[in-house]
Image 1: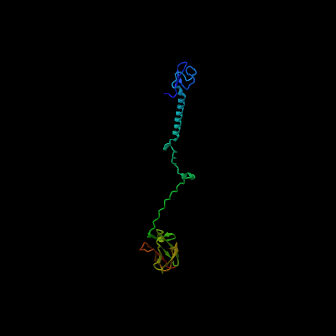
Image 2: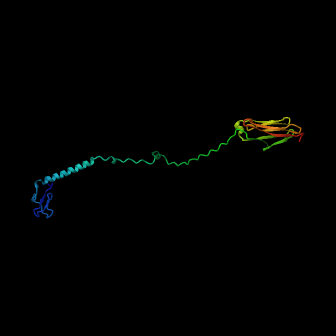
Image 3: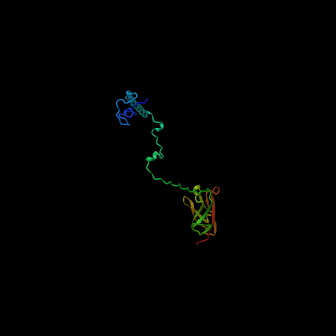
Amino acid sequence: MAIINEIKCARCDRKYSGVRSRCPYCGARRIGRGKYSEDSDNAKGKMLIGLLIMSVFTVGAVILLFSTPAPADAGTPEEAPSLSNPDDMNEPNLPMETPTPTPTPEPIPDILTEVRSIAITYDNKVTPGFSLYPGEKLGIGLLIEPPLVVEENNMEITWESSNEDRFTVTPMMHNGNYYRATVEGIATEQGSATLKVTVGDPDNGGMSHSITIGYWRGPR
């Protein structure tokens, strides 16, 4: 059964909805309850019931819509992880420092524990020997290889005349050791003697070296 009954127009005999007051086809005004209307006594009641039912459905739909919980994944989206470090956000933009290259260490020279060579010098030149007049004095020196072997090994330098009646030798301190000496002619007769210098212990890394010094009779 329809909620709203139809009524039949008294003029054109066409049916139309009972809620209308005029026939939509011929325009005749509805007279009374209409011609051949079914259950016309309950038409208004049924209309009110229909409106009430529609209102109930509408209210129920609204309540259902607002009372349904949202799905778990529909909540507040998690913030995407930041690609930048938060600590970096608070720091000023400092200029990048160019790393200082590490200098290549210079090789440490090998300091030998043994004397490799000795030479006696006169006037800054290596000499194999020389002659002295009586009373003549000459300054002489040493050339040692390697240069630092004496200091590193605390070697002692000694000078020696083979015959002090011919000439004498006096060691002279230089740079903390007797690297130099003074020789003086003594003899008045022609001949020669040996000047010997020793660096360290010849049996334990040291070395000795000798040259010949001649002398002349009488003054120059």
